[in-house]
Length: 124
View 1 (cartoon, helix red, strand yellow):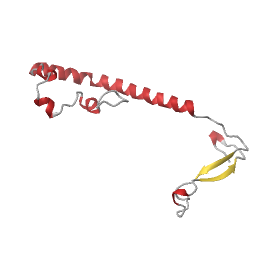
View 2 (cartoon, rainbow, N blue to C red; view 1 turned 60 degrees about the vertical axis):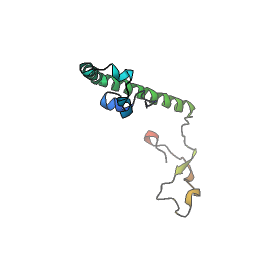
View 3 (cartoon, helix red, strand yellow; view 1 turned 180 degrees about the vertical axis):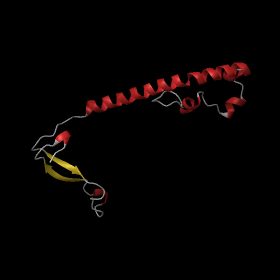
View 4 (cartoon, rainbow, N blue to C red; view 1 turned 180 degrees about the horizontal axis):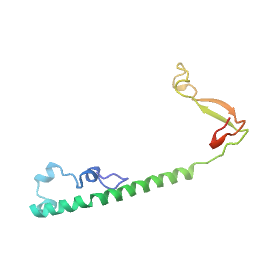
């Protein structure tokens, strides 16, 4: 099945042609009945020549989909800069968590008050 992000099957991106299941080969269909030996070889070579182009267009489509998801997320996210005097919570690491707390144990330490700013978004 074609992936929604790429629009093509993964098999066709790797091997340059669509996969054929044995039932399709055994039954006469229009897709395979018109192909003869030399004609099939020429179309196969043409498919292999176009593989890189299909991979490039698929890559562009994947990047566009990721950018669309990023725009959607960033549209809903509210950026709030931290300042001196703000209170924050610090996430607990697995090593610091109480083993007897279970899944209902606290996941955060704090609240901590920001007293000073350091470089590149670090705080004390």
